[in-house]
Amino acid sequence: MARIERFKNITLILGDALEVMASLPAGTFGGALADPPYSSGGNVRDRAMPTSAKYLQSGAAGRYPEFAGDTRDQRSYLAWSTMWMARARELVVPAGLLATFSDWRQLPVTTDAVQCAGWIWRGIVPWDKTESARPQLGRYRNQTEFVAWGTNGARPLAGPIAPGCFRMAVPRVKHHIAGKPVELMRGLLGVMQGAGPILDPFMGSATVGMACLELGLEYVGIEVDPTYFDIACERVRMASGGTF
Image (cartoon, rainbow, N blue to C red; front, top):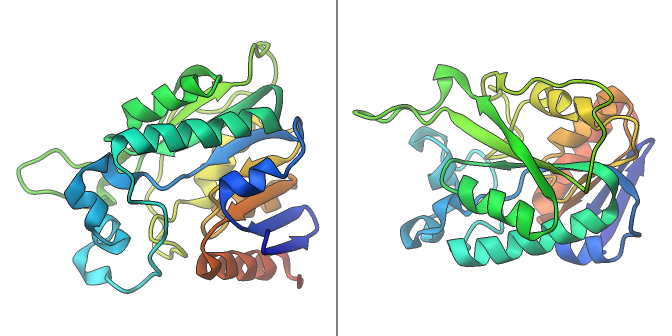
């Protein structure tokens, strides 16, 4: 692990998710909320494109740093996803949750990976990005992304209830190419509170960490890209009103 920054209940780690998770003790976390790089369907053309070209409108090119890990084809994406999800299951307590984002193209392989890794697949939570999502002439608007979720073994029917879908726009001010609303992360964390720290293997600009900061939850985020790691550190530092 090249670098670790801590403030109050927030721990940020610079490093590869699989390598860092291998060094963490089993049964440490109450749940995992992940937003991995989607690899955008895994076809050759998409894999060769920069992430800014895939996920931003043309006028926004160069606004955010590119991010790593988005070049896998679908077979390697399944293998890699199974590896990190299996390690995440070792780190999460029995009955704890995994919730992981996907777009429509990778949704089938993501749900396969959840089950290959030993989680019990429980369902899909849609995120409706509203009509602010990028339009495509002559087609239905791709304005929905998805969260596949499962549990580490049996989970009792007890505790809080979270919505089964969320409708909110992509933030106008983002810190990452694929940035998502903090409010969305708060909603997803609604059924993970109380069991232990939250694991975020692909923290990006620490949007999950920001939600955990607001909710008072302990959080461990991992990011492989030094540029986004620095952005995450500064974002959490500013929000907490303190210094690392």
